[in-house]
Length: 430
Image (cartoon, one colour):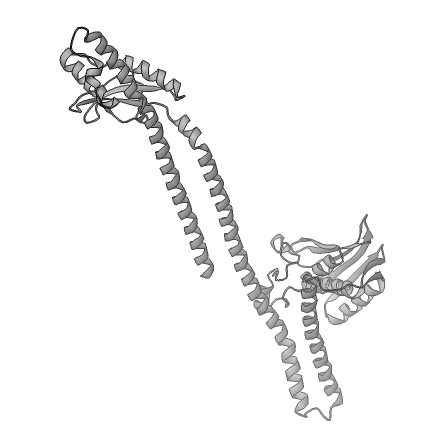
């Protein structure tokens, strides 16, 4: 639930950022479009002024109509409106859209603006009465209307027919920056969600680990408690053989618990780089012979060991290397069928001595091979425990991995489900 809450908050934050960024980009686009429209529109009154001035000069010769008289102290827009109004009423002369277009074209070229436009005459409702061409489209960017009548009944307007390359050029840095921000934010969000998933997975693995560890420790503890109570009862005081048997059981189970605790402590030291290895030249042959004898004594299964050591000496810490090899053989016995064949071989490579432990057991799935060396790697351990399968809580292979890393080497696995598993220890020569 907590993880889902963080996910929802993260996704909501992402959506909010995208909406705010989208709103900012839209407002910026509107501002840039308005600025482009205003810049183009600012050229239209001057074109109207030149056009009306020329018509006034031609039509008002010898008449009372003159430019200074009409303009007075009026603004450019007001004087253009007045001139056109007088020219229309007195001389029935209307604006020439083609002439306006020529002037606008020249003025736009001076200010380096796109010259694909249409000059339109519109009424007070914005309806187009006439235009100098038919290039305008519904997507054309229109300027404000400049009136040619005192009663505002008619006016001129420019339609920029293809403003988007110019807008795109002006907005491209913003769009690029926004895209980078979105990509970075998206990457951070994805990483955060993956981190939450990893934390959830680790929590689940820890829970499984705790369950399996308690399950594994419960059995020897129960045996120790029951044996101690039975001995304390005095019922076997006169039966030394049975008494000795119970002492042996208690001692064996206590050693088993101590081994588990020591393994945990060793892994912790290895992970924190606090374990000091005592490397020396080690003879593999007596180590493996001893491990094989103990393995045969501890199981009731039929085991056939094949040992072929082409290289018998390695540079390693004997104690930890012995424990690592023992873990591999214990696993081979646990995860096997009734008849077991375990092959132990060694050979030289350029930088390493390769020690291989191969069995004919149940094998390991591809999915489990990716996690079996993790500290909480399950390899279906928890599920097997609950179904009455092999006991254990996944420390053995992590121990092997940590020991090999401490030696400067590594451990790898090759396996096929229901056929075999082969673990290879890479022990550095130097």
